[in-house]
Length: 207
Length: 380
Image 1 (spheres, rainbow over the protein chains, first blue to last red):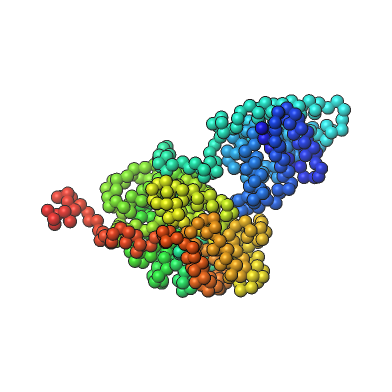
Image 2: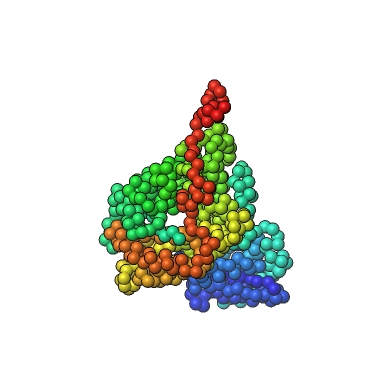
């Protein structure tokens, strides 16, 4: 069983961002044998996310979502383009995600905007964000302009299929990101299996 | 069971009047609040330590010594002492001095501090926070237990033949708590030394507090200090009460909504559901407080934050009167079902007794001609 989290930051309902997320999800499900989808619509969590920024802790339902996204084998992340980048809501979600939560996790990045002139946002803003988070971004990012949803002869389908295939190949192969030994220890790891004090002391004195 | 209060010493505008107290008022208010705490029968008063505005809690040792001189019974503590940016040599000297001046009425809670710019002001780096807490405390622990210390480490000048003076009162160091909200490493540190662990769970949900306290208890047992339920646990808490719960809610709401830490965020209703904050009648505060045991087990110290968010001194003193009224019921509640082997929080008296009595302690300089300490010279 492969778990894929889908984080979508569209604001209207229905939104073209969610529409694109759904198509990417469907293509990924098709490419994988057994798959469980964790669907996260950030609009529903907007207040929880702001509260988390202000109080420093997540509400119970946001904590649950953060844990499930962190535990997923792969991630599909879709944002509308706002002011030449990802939306603030999209960024806030990844700001409050525990450091290390996405270490080694394969991520398919995708974005929507009114025109294709924004398409480099994928590679100039979104890809570096996930590189910083130590995720593995699949080569194909999917950008959908409004035109893509109406025009004939668009290759959106082909791009979706290619990106989903790349994600499926990466997410399905490794037993878990933990198994690769590349994931940073999180607070939860320490709570379960604390670093012994002798090691903490040795570490403190190591330059 | 010890029940008390802690203050972080924030200077905050009263959102209902727009009035901001002066530093002088707030510093004097801290003393008035501590005296009131003793008057209503509380066991502990703890002050925070901050080195930046809008706080007045720099120099906690002067504050505690001054309060110590004006009180007779209450235990003085810190919430917290910055073990990261304060030289452990100074902590050893300062708190041993207060211990002598107050006849043992002092203990400390170690904390790291989370204000980035404060670290470089003291020549430190916040990214080394855990390492600073670990190494500095390891030195402090020795300074209070060994008369002459040779030491070298990463974060301060080495020491050769150093004696921290005065030596701890009766040969027994002040009891130490380690406070942390989210760093399992600090729970591990507290467990390793057999010190207390304080979880200031006022900003975090009970589920998280439970995990941190569980870890500390587990590791306390692992490090050989006894069964997990004999570990020394302290919890934070905050309340606002009036006889009628609706009055409490109406009066506190503007303070909550504009509070420096959680203001302009979640609703008061959400926050009271998610954290131990209780806004209501004395009976509600009593019941909520006693329910902390459901996830922390039987514990040793409960400290409440009562002077914050711009609440005027008069209101804070009224809150303490109300707390005093429910104190006997709170003590009785905490005693209920408490197994006999669960210890109380250590005090100077209990630590002296555990050590087999007081040791008169004075360390004299070695005679630079004979190489002997005076005691040796006499017995020789």
